Image 1 (cartoon, rainbow, N blue to C red):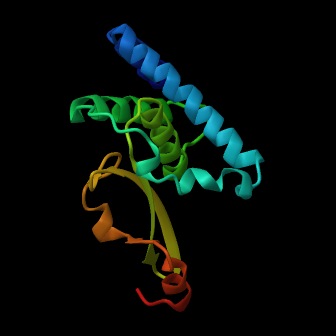
Image 2 (tube, rainbow, N blue to C red):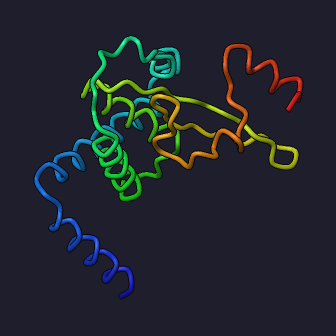
Length: 158
């Protein structure tokens, strides 16, 4: 019964969205599905270019931070309510692709941190050195993998 109440509450909130927000939600849900399917089925070599898209390659758009924040928030809602679990990499790629469609440049970052004897990886999105889809301290919690970053991970320098 609690599950049903939770779903009904979500449906009620959906009806309070305006048409622009509904279309963004649908776009985000479909983009996440497409990114998830691609990453799950297609060899890495065919989609690795998604991770190295340089912001200079996207025409600049002077979108407001409120517009970008709205897009990211709606994409996060779509990710939380998807059929499959959307990890940080899938969310970041999908959000970047949605921003690129609007000619808003952004950058995907991948970082790692040690958790005991293991490494934990995380992906996040930035624009103009501002983290878009995570807390601002993500750069303090993770060591970003940049050119040559894998050498640091292999040698355990951090």
